[in-house]
Image (cartoon, rainbow, N blue to C red; front, side, top):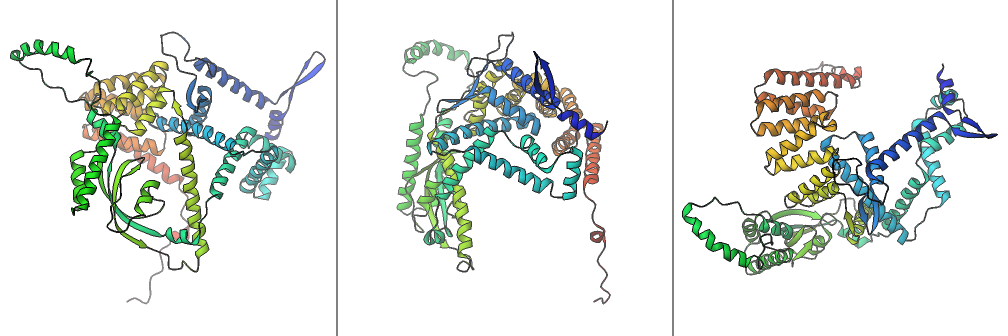
Length: 568
């Protein structure tokens, strides 16, 4: 059967006679497509239940059910069905590894949250999109496809002949099959209009243009109250048990401990956030006072940084222009003259006191001749910054609740991995209980336990993962387990897992290349020479395959330049 006849069959509408009438069922391809859609929707319903209801994986085992909502933005829910659909297509398109799944899942949630925020912001601004605008956008997309993929008229003519259709019919096909649905186009146009409205409000007069080339040189001491609080509340290392002669004292102390239990619970934090903020302000106030009395800013700031520890940091920031720092920090810096010290400045990073060391205006040599070009360049920078600040303001003013335990764990780790590690581990455990097939949650939990020095617990979690259907095929899971076993001194078991990692990482891509490089190094360190040689062989084959895919170098580039007959 010819290609043309096959395509005609695929496009042919199937009809069903019923009670004296003929019902069109659509083309075979359309029917197959809708069958897949129905399977996906039914499968999602089976796993999570109807949107807005309880839901959770069905079946026995006493597993904790997952909520049907993953997050809420100002009370408006983001359903698990919607999130799962985007995750499904992301996995199909990107084929991420277990290590990359955390980033993929976080990005999908961020996208859905941003969509909610921007949709409501556009509605508040009275921005709308008409049906005519949607159709015009679809026409524009078809024009772009024609201009990029079918610019060659002879190739276009061949395609039309193969499809046995006119140019107009072909464009209609592109509109149907290669452009998004109306609601997707409507949302994109809505967001574009909102962004353009925000950017159009940005102006830049001559004085502001000159100021955009002004620079200051500064240094600062930054104290992060959240980290200060976390360090103060960190549990003290357990002391060794005393000798027998200390035992009598324990009985005497028992009654005192019972009496004071109500006044000072064991889990009461030693420092609240308010106390940490007050402590930070106290230190920064002392810094300003000592510098005002003649002491060197850098010396005193470094002294406090050393004394406080990781929660404080002294930095020489060098020269910077407007738009490079946090808005509050920038405003304070450009208000100072060289030698002046700021008041306490609060930003999202913490509390600062800064000193300006220098100030200068660095205009381009051709500034006057090309003023308007420079204005447009700086204006575009300001527009992008304004749009970023607008989105950040939407986030800051919104009440965003992340309900899904795995996604909430990732958010906590993004905010402060050290301070939130224990809580994130609990949430990942909850995610696994709710969905035993969640491979990425197991992978991240094992990694988190290993980072916390709980190697045996990490090995147990990762072993469960590699014995599952999803984890068994993951080179990263076998590699991580092998590294954990090696750290625990279980060399033979480690070698077996590292060999499995090598066997599953066979596709010629850069991720597998990096994994085989790691394996070769580890096999060499472990004295497994034969396995190390096998990894080198794989890498050599990968390099050869890459070389074959590279375009040939033109002969003119390969020729050596003619010799200089004149000589020296």
